[in-house]
Image (cartoon, rainbow, N blue to C red; front, side, top):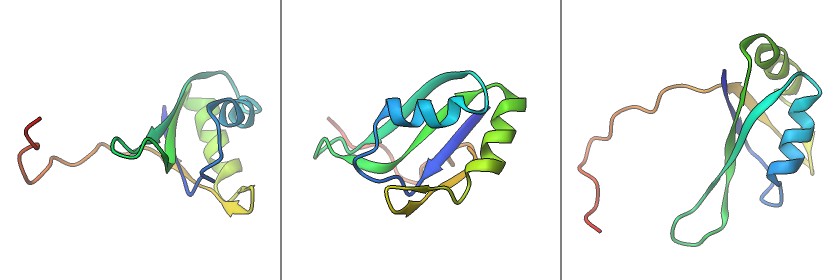
Length: 89
């Protein structure tokens, strides 16, 4: 199960998220989204867990306070197709 974690403090680390989610089961991966231009965190990320433990983590951690910010935790949705072509590199 892929879990969206939003409203993260910009200081959050992969290890902090892993530790938080491991209270509910085995964590396969943790990815924090980084802005390509600035190299700074964008304030959200994704955690991959087994479905059963992922459901428990979503229910328990949605609204959890982390460094003064209320996390938004939900099952991840597929990214909609882009409406414009990608920028040339």
